[in-house]
Length: 105
Image (cartoon, rainbow, N blue to C red; front, side, top):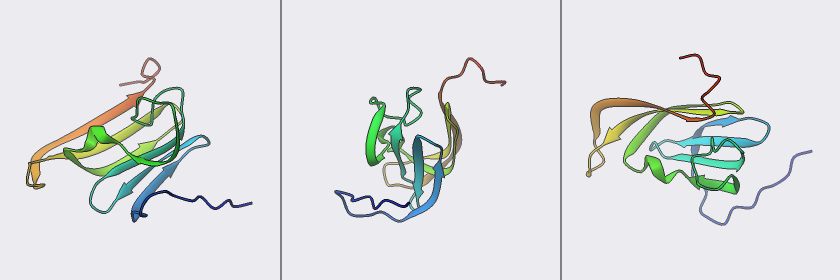
């Protein structure tokens, strides 16, 4: 059964959503990253491990997020750094958040 989620802020148009059984990531058309749910591995990108509604991940304020991927123990984010004016810079960055000891790099 679907459950309606009431948001306490103006809805943002998400262009991509990644979900697992306990949390989610969402990307907006202007490159902002939102996350929500519960994660003991801090894959949400917030200091708290339980976020009830989509919340902007402040760590990406200076980036335009291009791609996201989510698993139960990791979040991967591909982003481009932006200048103060919001213009994309040439450098691209791949971020990984979560439990890394089992990762094969």
